[in-house]
Image (cartoon, rainbow, N blue to C red; front, side):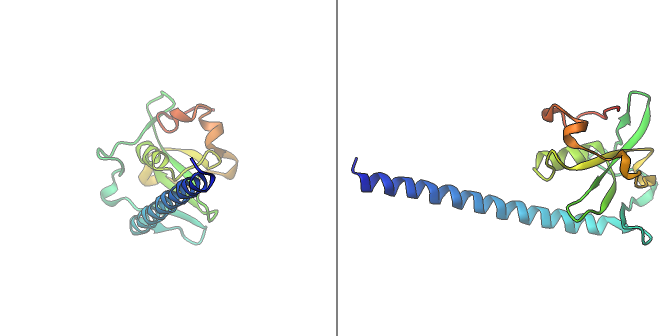
Length: 152
């Protein structure tokens, strides 16, 4: 194969890879934008404390297709999750299933700081900052992220 043809093929492959990456990034951005809009619609504002709380209608915990809240630590105790978003705001009151879905969609990286919140999601309050750890600390085996509630 001629050197010019080889370079043209490499350039075409690089351009194709960049186009795929750009379209994937655009789709991810659009999905995140829609998710943020949906979350904003479902969340109530904290009372001047910089914490966004999830508003749950009817007093039940919302999440996944079955509305279950994870049982934490094997003690039969309900728990939900809080995390610190890219704007350094605490988001609180999310089920294990929701966190797993968002992790699977690529929204959370291993340096995301999150915390387990004891009690039902509809009563979740932001935990102290000392209780937030990175995903890598909560789940050293990244394939297990949000498949169980770990104990520290």
